Image 1 (cartoon, rainbow, N blue to C red):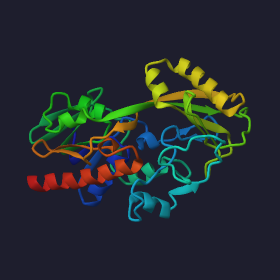
Image 2 (cartoon, helix red, strand yellow; image 1 turned 180 degrees about the vertical axis):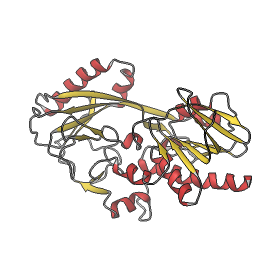
Image 3 (tube, rainbow, N blue to C red; image 1 turned 120 degrees about the vertical axis):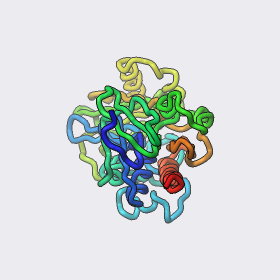
Image 4 (spheres, one colour; image 1 turned 30 degrees about the vertical axis):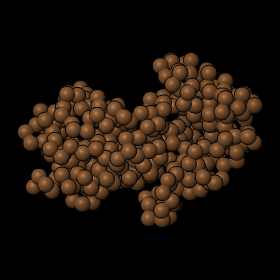
Length: 330
């Protein structure tokens, strides 16, 4: 049984969903955002370590593909949500794509941007949508355990394209075929922390041959606690090859790779996180998918490209499209 009706329900509190929610809320619409994780941010989230360490185990920097002064990314820079980090790069390390001369990082953590966007919004976390079904002139979204549901006039699915397809089920969606065109590189992340980790001369180690492509010092980032912590991001090829491997095996192999990259044994507590939909490899090529008749939209970075800015642009366009659809319905 649906408990309350909203004008718009957004599934997913990554940067696309949060941006759409912020724009719609500021325009006076009654919105609700449902997020299955413990907090907002998606791949810009930050994990707390056992000490004072904070580990950005997904996105390591925020780039601006457009470089336009009026962009959201430029505004985050001006407001000091993001600051430049001149990471000391080990000799011979390849520079990450889109990184630029200085890494733009959230301060004190990468999750700060998502938290700022989410401030004041009607957001429910740890709320996993199991199904969406037509309900009269709108939609009913039901939680995984079936105990709670919400109704809405319009739904925005702001999740990775394969998850959007899963949520759609048998529902009609005129842009369904486009969803099949979006694809991703998976990424395994190694999270390493502990007081016994030795001091290293560089903040960033990169490789084109190791399982770990990038190894990044978290404690060296601006406004971070000095507790030593590292995040290693595995290469796309290695991550795909080991996509369904057990966490224990992945920890052992990535830790061995980190030791080789650093040239010393990085003793400490190692954990891994699998980003099944880590980086967009093939975007759809349009900013938002819209089915006006069904009052159903889908958005995300996968619409436009790989960067945070692509996700934000898609979120803005989703909000504009939603307002057009709702105005036609009035």
